[in-house]
Image (cartoon, one colour):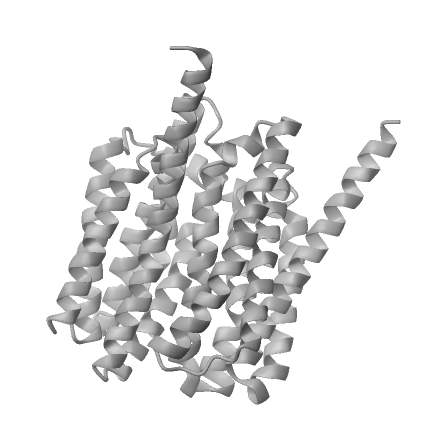
Amino acid sequence: MSLKSAFAAIYNKTFLNSVFNAGRSLINPLFVALFSYLFISQNLHIDLLKINRVTALVNLALIFSGWGLRDYLFKNSVKHHADFNRTWHLAFYTKFILLIPILLISVFSLDDRTVIFIMLVSVFKTFNVLYEPLIVLHKRSVLFFFFDFLVALVSVVLIMQGVINTFHLFFNLLLVSEFLKMLLNCVIFRKPAFIINDFGALLFFLKDTKYYFFLVLVSFFQTKADLYVLGFLLNPGKLNEYQLLSSLISLVQIVIVGYIVSYSKLFYRNINSSELVFKRIVLGAGSLMALIASFLIYYVLNFIYGFYFSPVNIVIVMINTIAFANVLHEMFHYTRMDWLNTVLLFVIVAGAVNLLLSLLLVGGLGVQGALIANTGSLLALWGLMNRRRIFKQRKKILSGL
């Protein structure tokens, strides 16, 4: 086989896995949008509201138990196999420490069935997320795409047939699917392969990765302040509507991230030509998705779900998506250069922008006001990160003259 044909084969395999990795990222948000439609069409608004609230609690639990280690492992996936294997196992066993608060809450709330759901779903999702870097690294995206697709398909059929018609049954189904995924992960990757019982090493690992946790924590509130202000403070009646809109926008963002992550090694090679290719991939994917998604979201909300979504919001969604793609590109730079303290500060500022704009706009503009607040927050974050990075790079160049 010639060098050219070998390179083409490797590229095609990488491209195929990147497509299916993006496809995996699509399945969950698409499923959320579809089951929301089915619950609304069956007049199960109260159960849908309960699902949204419990999901919000699970997401809060996952922020703590996740500790930002998914991103940390992606960054360290370029290390030597033995070093990365050690890092992965450290991340795995620290999860037992991070899950202690969630387990304690469940122990003192055994009479509350909802808390049990939150605990179990959080446990399974906490461990499953650690295997995501392995799926990309070992090019197993195709296999897990079909697994996720099959689970979603079975779930939709059960909901359509009326078998799943309460939020308790919905979370029973979710528990089963997460448990099966955890078993599949363990079998495919044969991890964990050894035990780490050095408690001091685990605590040191948590301390060493604490900024990843802080970044995930403040990022969560930076992106969700608009949702909580609208749904729980100023306009509770619009919670399901804005939750659906947020899910659709998140779907667009997940597609971008899922596609880009497969090419992240180009960036971490520290080669200028590779970085330029990576930048074109990020910004190209963001621009294309902004154009497609804005019109698609407008159509879906107005003509399928029956919500009113102003044409002005098409432009806002475009700006939101482009800003997100640029923030993603900046984040790769900041992660590689270990500027996490600076990122943390900028995200806090962006979160404050989101909260302030939400309080000012949601009361009068409703869903559109929340969307503007979210977009303004992303623009603020992009501006701060870009200006700081360019300033530091220019300063470094000048100092070397």
